[in-house]
Each structure stands twice: as structure tokens, then as C-alpha cells.
Image 1 (cartoon, helix red, strand yellow):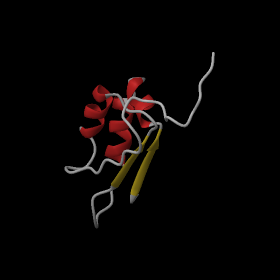
Image 2 (cartoon, helix red, strand yellow; image 1 turned 90 degrees about the horizontal axis):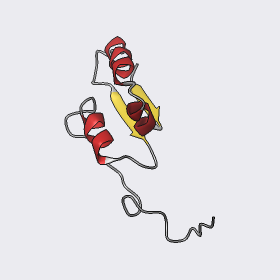
Image 3 (cartoon, one colour; image 1 turned 30 degrees about the vertical axis):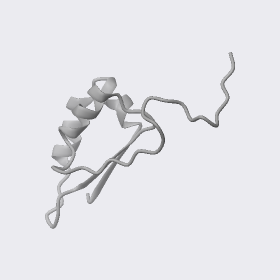
Image 4 (spheres, helix red, strand yellow; image 1 turned 120 degrees about the vertical axis):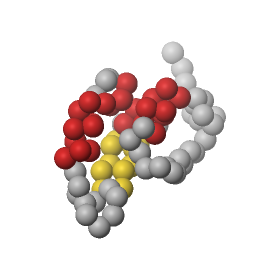
Length: 79
């Protein structure tokens, strides 16, 4: 395994699946380089982000588009 991609990773961590993720990561090995881990999510609360950092690489790259914790200004929401 060279890459692990977790889509909706915030939900996985919020649902308390860290133990299962630890088992999956422990079972994945690649001798030549560390495994590349990617966590994708539209929103990541700060508590979940710190939990995610616990299993990511030593120096993860965070790509953020837009303003944190805010809806896009171009989207009109009605109830």
C-alpha cells in the first residue's frame, strides 16, 4: 500500500473509529517510503483536526479553500 485516502475523514473520527483506523494503518506497510495519507473533508472541527494530526505524517500539508467555519458567500440558503 502506497497511499491511504480517507474521504469524509472528519466523520470517521467523530464517529469514534480511531481504533479501527489504527488497525488499518498498522496493517498497511510499504518498505520504500512512508505511506502517503490523505484526509479529505469539507469541514474539520479543531478537535477532530488535532486527532487527525496524531496519525498523519510529521509535517502534514493543510489545503484550505474559503473561510474556516463559514458558508460560501455565493451560496444563498433559505428555510
